[in-house]
Amino acid sequence: MPSTFTTNKNIEKPAYNSFVDDWNTPVNADWDIIDKGFGGTHTVSLTNVNVTLTQDECQNVHILLTGALTGNVIVSFPSGVSGFYIVDNVTTGAYTVTLDSDGGGPLAVAAVQDANTFIFSDGTDVYLADNAPVTAGTGITVTGTTIALQTPVTAANGGTGATSYTDGELLIGNTGGGLTKATLTAGSNVTITNGNGSITIAASGSGGGSGPGNAFAVSYIVVGI
View 1 (cartoon, rainbow, N blue to C red):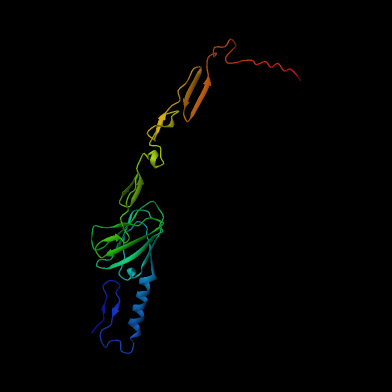
View 2: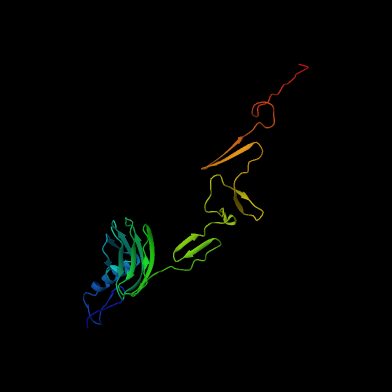
């Protein structure tokens, strides 16, 4: 009888009484496959052409993506083959790499550049292997794999509660425990100019004195020295 092979890693299962004098041939090959399943690397150089991995290539646990991207690329895992993979995307170029299955399922995963993406392919779809839900705290939103601050960030969460300002506006504490945008109010004989990123405060008028402007004189009479 001929050998049979495992579904996912293509490990040879010799038939009874086969390889009587050279049993080491399939055994050594099988151990090489097992070794790759724990620590092997298969390197794929990408440009702008989609790539479908073979079953033998997917015997490796580590898939290293290299190359300068000139377009968005899809890397497909073989249909009917299951397994965990660490996909290391060290490509360059402002394009995306998507990991899917040649089995035609709708689920796929983005391989982020300069990061390792831990995935599981079931032969039909590709999933994030570690996709435990992330619970958003106060002032935070979680959408898919994106975590973002809600805007504007409130004063209670360390922000200002504002998104834009006009010339000369400052943030002033209020009785509600927050911040209010306000400009300075000029008092008597004071002018305030709210500029682009600046506030100028200057004296104006004579201040009620008889001399020019706000000029004044002080006389000291020193005795006993």
